[in-house]
Image (cartoon, rainbow, N blue to C red; front, side):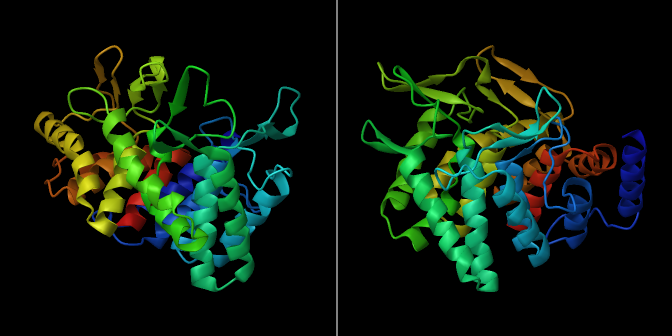
Length: 354
């Protein structure tokens, strides 16, 4: 394991010496090459190396999305086939979200519940692949998965359509637990085009209400997790999980990309708090890793470089000049965090969304 890590770091350092870091825009095939080398096995498994080497449907969906975005047909089909062989649930078209090593040292499915965002990225990626490579089987497979997502994870509550994070465990008797970063409007737009069900457009429209009411703090930005209290019908904190951080860094990224595509002012208004947030970061020249809404604390430690890449993307999209140190911080992170799958994924998103 140590030898493998040494070789990975050696390869990464050689890669870094050949790339111009000032060009963090446009499609950069070198980034994709490094992601494949570090996180995708020859069999097609996408590994989260900071999380006990597990594979989850998020990583699979991201891997498929990156592959089709960078035009890598071979890797796309490789990852898709590994997914079908190892994470299919059988009774539905959904996928079990977590695969890895159990307490007995055996590799296999660790949790048969699905993760809605992972299933969404898989279906979305298959639709993009169908559009690029004209494989009709991908279209039919995506449609079946979209149907299952719709039937098992979309609910109507208090006159609004909501997306549950999974099939089981989130719609309780007294509250509904939600993850704002799972609500991805540009994916719903694609589903609406192929599924011909108005519920997807309704979900986009109702997501404006969800984003507005689930934002916390004076700035009104989003936590990783939130809940709707069924007695008051209000959005409230979800304990210690109501932190702007690991999950929620994706929320403004996906909203900003959707606004870039549509110029829908409803979504621009949702980003108002983030604009103030970015101005504050720039003024301090001190990067925020987490905001703990429950305990009213801001954690100023060096965020992973993927977080900083999202910051840079948002500075660009919101037409704010970025702090002078931001680019250097991204470069330093790339050199030092060679095994951070999630951070590298965020970087690839910003590369593609530009």
